[in-house]
Image (cartoon, rainbow, N blue to C red; front, side, top):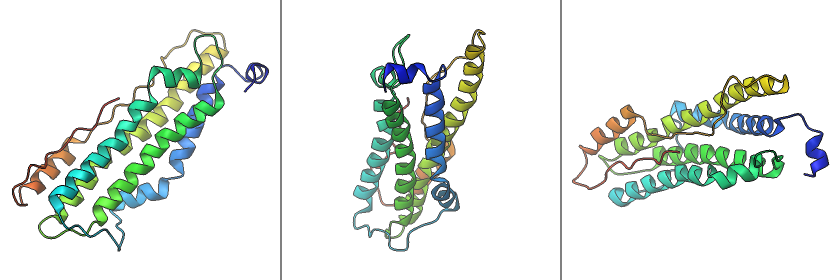
Length: 206
């Protein structure tokens, strides 16, 4: 985008674009999210031969998906998207940032569905069901971040465009954690399977 094009846009257009693209991107996955809440599974799930190894690998994949947010929220990425102080942002970089967050959301949905759909021998199915529920809180936290950012940015931009000091601060803090109840359910399910060193890994926080 040229400086002329940027200058013709309203003050703070970068935050409007980010909030809009993020919310619209998440909304596109509303049906998949409802399927997640309903516990929908695929009839042709993957056949699991070694549950201990498979659960470890699935946990690592879930963490890797969430950890991608750490690469999206670095100071360098945010500055490239929104511009340094006094400089306009970059529409394409903002699009990539919003799309990256949506991609993590969609990947978590698919990850959870794959976990639930896995065909594992007894007594492992409850472990897979509990593992899939690790996505519950991260998905909600991403949705909350998006809606809260829209609300806060609207207030801040209304103030700034009216020449008033901002009454709120804009931040890009998105903390991702596994719910305590989900962790407890997974730990309980593990007690019913053969001895294993499978331990719940923590999801990185951003």
